[in-house]
Length: 526
Image 1 (tube, rainbow, N blue to C red):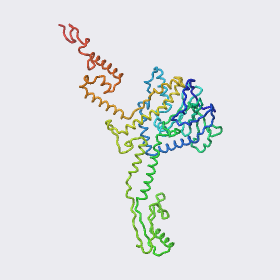
Image 2 (cartoon, rainbow, N blue to C red; image 1 turned 45 degrees about the horizontal axis):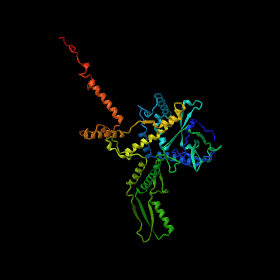
Image 3 (spheres, rainbow, N blue to C red; image 1 turned 120 degrees about the vertical axis):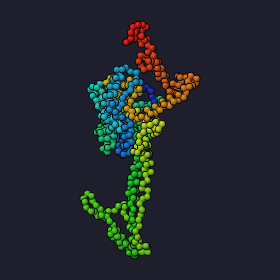
Image 4 (cartoon, rainbow, N blue to C red; image 1 turned 120 degrees about the horizontal axis):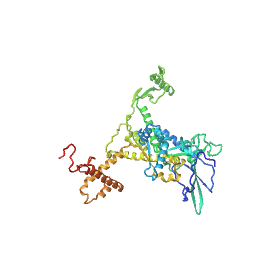
């Protein structure tokens, strides 16, 4: 195959697993799976179908994000997830669960800080998260000086997801009576014109002289997705995908309501013109003459300042002119009343709430008349608790971006090997700046209820309940917390015995007593 563009991180020979399976691996990265057999594979990769459809999806998501209701919901989600605080970083790394030396932890924290600087997280954290949330995927080209890879990543350059696609090659081998499937290679295909472009006609982006599709090494790209995929696990979906139908329904209903109100708001007249025994042609001419005579279509042109006659134009608010033959009641003018239910918006409100539910945002947050109260945890709605858990899931999925960048930085700079990082990366935690007080309220109220229960069973302590049981089952302390608290309380008692309750010297302390026979300060000797 053609030489890959970009750098590749060398793997250990023992990295390839000897475990075998007959099932093709399932991933949520939306890669195009190319299955080969016989121990060899060609260069043909058909991206025209799935890549084009996925590019169209991204374009649709971006158009959705421009709608006021959707934009309001997205803004609320991002503001809750990414908190910009000038006193502390947007996100910090937590290495407490790692059994590493102090120097290695210091290097990891330095590289994490460098990664945040490459992403411009402090300045552009909002925009970065918005791109990932709306598109459902995020691509960066990790620019590395291949002559001096130990300097690490020099730049993270954003790539439009409509111009790049991941390809995964798998190989099937017959062993005995079953087929073994294993991953052969993974790479990316980049097309500067985009897979959605009409100029992209060739089915083979890797063919020479084709659409100039560039084959890029897997390690040169930093790639994260939303984790959502379609029913066939072929395309990555955005969190906005389930809101497509409610948004379209709301827009159609709003347009229909506008047209109905414009057409039914005015009262229109019905003119019954008596044409007697006139022939059909003359009756029609007489009707047109009456329309022209009685129509008043003089309007003021604000652009030119002129009075203009618009009798030749027909509108949806025109009066009705109907001929009436001899024997009728002669010429008559009646009034057609306008719509009577123009102020009813229940149907629009229904679909608006349906749209908000699809966007995972509590309806109370999107209602302008609804205020925000910070009270007891019991007063917090179930929707707010669900929203808080949804934000935590988004943060956890978005944190994969930091993990993948750190992997490349640490390996390139020789801090640790790829295998060592894979073995500990699951223990690395990322702490985002919190701005949601619901969890704090919940914990405070739970502790208040536990202390109240503790008072209720205080008289039964030592009779039916042991102190150790109360600590574990009422206060929900683990054994380490119990041991630490016991040691701290004993230390505090010892300090009080030595220095007194106020922290000063105890009056009965040996060093605070006057030796017998010595006068007090300021006194006289007997």
